[in-house]
Image (cartoon, rainbow, N blue to C red):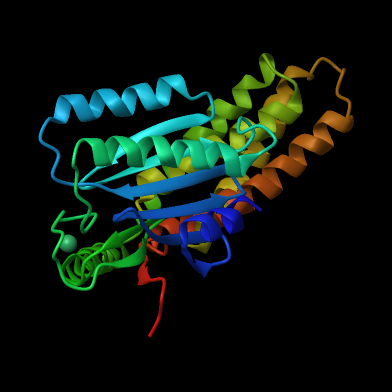
Length: 280
Ligand SMILES: [Zn+2]
């Protein structure tokens, strides 16, 4: 595995199965393998950049000239390089190593520093790898506490938001009716898919919070409207229940439950996590 080899080569530690982290030539680095989206996320802490334009030009060239690099993001005092696993060829280790060397060589040449990924201070206290929402980055104690407070407040705010069931119902109905009307242009399986996505998402946006009611209600309205549209389209006596109808109905049920539960979690702020990867 590429991560194992990288850990060995650069003397990195492995706080999680899919993550290696440490310092390469004095630069804080973290490499995470996300095999759900088939990408590697390479995080480098970098600060003390004298010429921002030159730095951004380097990042842009890095992205343009390496076919395996999907995206490069520059935030606060760190960069995230997204590497596509599909475009990394047969030898992922070699590909990642080349990218790492390119970046570190440039950093060293320009005499950039590496400190806390948030505040950028090199001599900040206890710089440690932390998981912040979906990212892993080395930050100092001070920034960790600040960020934890901010996320806690945000979660508290979300928990205290009341579900506007009335607007949610309107959203679910609007989504279902629009979806149902597409019966005139599409096969039923796609109608089912579109109808449930529209009504579930509109419920969540308008209600500002999703309860179990918000999970179930759009499923019911989607079914009624999707079938209603189908029935109207075939009201001339050509009504048949074929495989498309079964698949479409399955979509409404399964997608409805999946998106609904996802929205329910999202509206509770469950994703706003911050934790240190090495727990003492
Ligand atoms: Zn900091």
